Length: 439
Ligand code: PEP
Ligand code: MG
Image 1 (tube, rainbow, N blue to C red):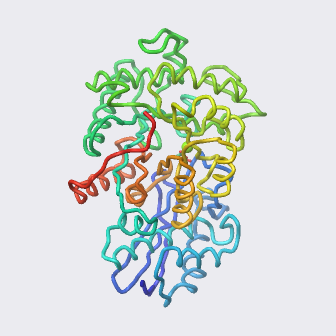
Image 2 (image 1 turned 45 degrees about the horizontal axis):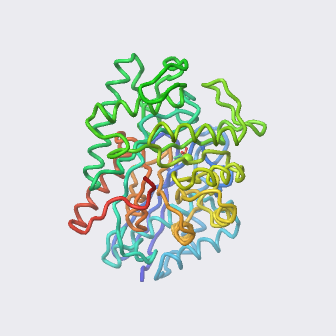
Image 3 (image 1 turned 120 degrees about the vertical axis):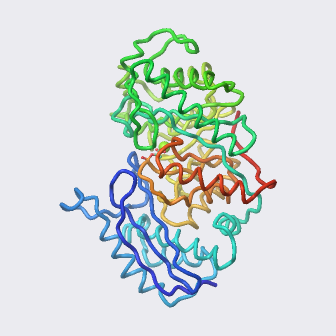
């Protein structure tokens, strides 16, 4: 039982320099805090992130969300005792009373929900992952395999490629620490390769490189792909980096893709600006098929727009037996949308982002529904993230075996990787690494 003595929130900055909410929950055992992340290519069906509008911070301030915590939420919770995450989150949901958290703001609600998880963990003398695992009914902790983004485009990097994230997955490595070492080594190798090709190595929002591949790739022949345009050029460069770093492509290291296709869906068509092509959903399905034939891609996220359940279904029907089909903007960690996708066989994996839905309990429910539907789950950061490493514990707790948390660079990304190194140490010989992905 946790007795909440005080609740307090403040406005802090996320990794993009945009305001976000930090909450503190004070109990007899101490003060427990959490900071909420925020998306750039956010899905339109996500729970409402409350922003102030007006002049300050170009309208991006969160002082209304902060005062909702300091007034409405504090008034309701201070002096009360709670024995579970579900009980606390139930009160928050009742207080908000809307479908999409539009009264209090999902950012206000989630900050308190996450800080409470930390308070409960200490109350029960557990690590955060231990408490979240208990809340989820899972005792099999798993260190996740990273989906680490190395090249980014789309809304994350001024459209240097149409697809948003080209990721490396060290699926063949045997432990989290060796997987992270591999990721870091390949990342630095890629930087050298880019420099040699006169491409810049400045990093984007999630620590990944964002070279202008259009300049490099006027449909030239690649060592791996027969024909290279900017989107497949990214995988070509990753392939070279993997091999030059001394890892075996397809064996030690596989690839994952987050297309974030809503960003280039215009008037019912998919407009690939960097390749000068406009495709139907069906043509895009075939284009992914060609990529799968050439590169060891094991996961494709948001290959289609956020309401294009049909194209997702076509892709899953054709390729779901050999690739993980992940729904992010399509599903927004929302059980109703997951149910629809299950009934239409639109995906076989859920991208789990707690701030898309707004409470820890609802995030766990979404993961439960995905597992019950025989889907995989990938726990994910946001492009606007913070030093809070909550999702590292969440991934271990639910045992999903996969985390997407950026490049092995920039402290808001390495905070999660470093927390996972510490968890691996704590679990010692019991540390199971990465499972549940298709290879
Ligand atoms: C994503 O699309 O998976 C992502 C992490 O980006 P954002 O946070 O901008 O939605
Ligand atoms: Mg995504």
